[in-house]
Image (tube, rainbow, N blue to C red; front, side, top):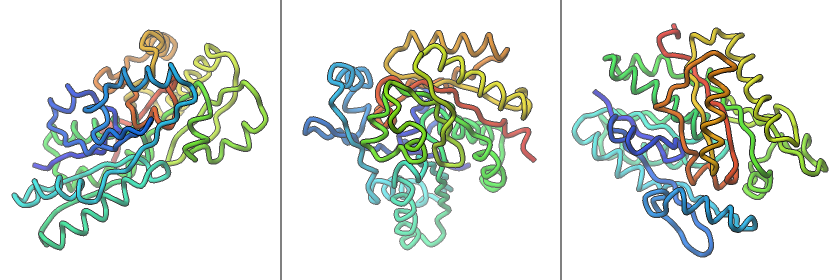
Length: 294
């Protein structure tokens, strides 16, 4: 038996979190002078998105969980001898991992026999959810935490999210644009295709027409799946403000790639990720099935 934890960037549904007994450590968000310490528990995703849609000049901020917040969560389990595995959003996007690691050190001083593993998921939103889902599946299949950890490096390296945004402003203001800057600088009205792998975001293409960009996302995902054996992968979608666009996109993926999405990990992109991508993010997440990893 072991406990699965994650910071709230994973965007898993409350139903999934409850059904699989996952502990979520909240990343706080703030704007207009207000701070919401428990993100979607204190402000609904719908209200958060609507504020950004109504005011395109409004740019929220996130604050990583405190060391003590992680430490309190760890203590609840290690005091009873229960091992913990905790996932955080990519270190390239947030310092949540550092906060969790400091908490681990603190708790291990108090409980020298504590078994705490903190992993930088190297991902965000839908792919962070997919990683956790694979760990849930391994746990349900009876794998020990030791056997789970043997698969984690290859599992996380297999994960990809291919996505687009409605505006680069959020990534630029949040300092997350990185390598994309040289490809998008000076190109008015274009939207990028972004590929996140191994913890960082990279350039996948440019376009102005939203529908053409969505088709390009599907094409890029299809190429990756075909090269690595699509039968070996689980695929899900993350979508932003426009739920109808998300549903339509899911249908297109299933039809064009001849696959079935994992509905458990199709996610409504949450307020943490929305802070850095804006309300119109849309992406395809993929991960290799743990059973196919040696």
